[in-house]
Length: 177
Ligand code: ADP
Image 1 (cartoon, protein in one colour):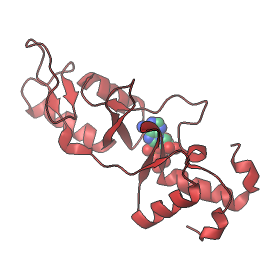
Image 2 (image 1 turned 120 degrees about the vertical axis):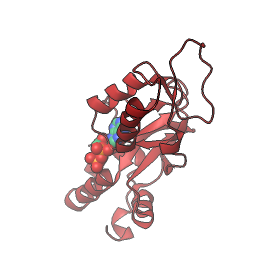
Image 3 (image 1 turned 180 degrees about the vertical axis):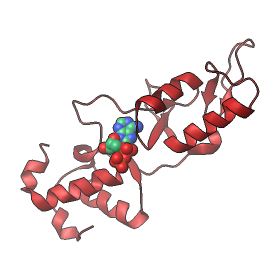
Image 4 (image 1 turned 90 degrees about the vertical axis):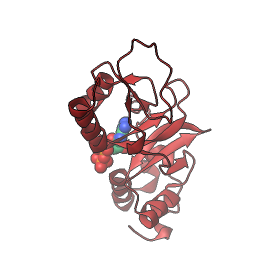
């Protein structure tokens, strides 16, 4: 990563984060309303290293971040070893299980694999600062919020690509990628 002076123009976190304006929404999990089969489908249909967990899709309030590999291992283990865990079991990342009818299948608590304080920046944070944070804290990814709502994600690779573009291109054109 390069010296500060090279990032003096104003690219913001929102210009580098995914998803881009035209892309499908961020792939998130909800804290206590998805079933084992829903989460398995997401893990099978996407290759992301991790997924933000939100209170609900409507609120987009960030609860934490869960790594793909931890999700896969925990669900596999639970299906093998934990009594009553089936495709329609509800997964919860909260402290207490959500209220469900007595006839519902056993629920699967995954709070232990949730990172409850993932690093976040606001969408207006200059990339110069984001690059600095990645470098100094050794981050793998950082979440982007606006007014407390989750908007996007920036991975280490996104930051490295951004730096490569800055080195190769007219800075003005980067804003319009
Ligand atoms: P890497 O950037 O190292 O390839 P990922 O595979 O996790 O890491 O991410 C690939 C791309 O998808 C990156 O540009 C990243 O910003 C984006 N991304 C990562 N996680 C998610 C997610 N949960 N939903 C949508 N996009 C994501």
